[in-house]
Length: 382
Image (cartoon, rainbow, N blue to C red; front, top):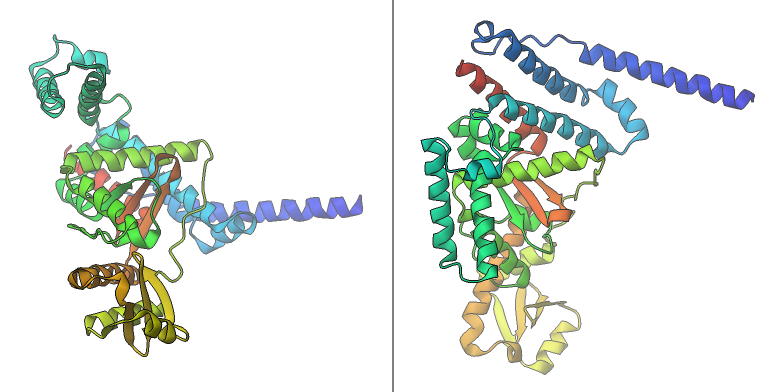
């Protein structure tokens, strides 16, 4: 009994100390002194934006050392980051609702022929695009594809639950929109690739030297084929799905960056290939050298690396294929090596076989910047 009472006292003390430290941080008044037109906007909008600003402030307060130490004492460190992300995503949702230009329409309302001239024009253009992509609808499969295509066009502009898309299209300025379209991309395939691989896929990526690179290339080509509006839509839907996962308390541990995306031997091999220190040997000589060399395989080609020289079993690579094989090997090595210098964050959504890849900074920093720009942009329009 005495032990239980002691535990309760300690637990209460910890709880009180945490509440005190958190209160010191979050009770700071949010003064929108740097916001444009603040005194000119109506009270209702001021209250909504103040709510967003306080929530952003709460998210930032959670990284305060005095607060974080209490949360991390009984939780995994990634849970604190997930909580901050959730708070910021809720701000994105609220700003999207504030910034809506048009009243959202259901799909059936959107199809109604009595709509405004603008809505009819958009709908007719969307249906024409769907017809051109599907062709003559003369079977059930084409009919389903046609309906999906039309519905996808509807969601781009009129979806009822499009707060996230409204945030990216209505609240953000064109400069920020272009930055997102250029510095973010969504990998869509199964299986999901590693952090380092996804971070290294650049515009024009066309490395087909392995199965994983084919997946990366095809996914990147799909992304590059989208226009800016479609890219913003996919990013918005990804983040909305992530937000809904958090709402359901489905917070998965983040996929960590590969500890060593490329071993030193691959760097040395890359240098050997670049300097053309490559020999092709008979089976007996290859096995003799391979006894104390670094053996590996690349696309079923047996190789040995020894004394700064790449040695290849000549029976695996025909004479006419050698130049092509070396070129592909060189491309593959550079992809791996560049991953060490990649800066950014990759967020995985395993249920959807998707990954959002951000270049240059992580999601929390990006969300804070986007929210700040969105709030100022909304006020500038008033």
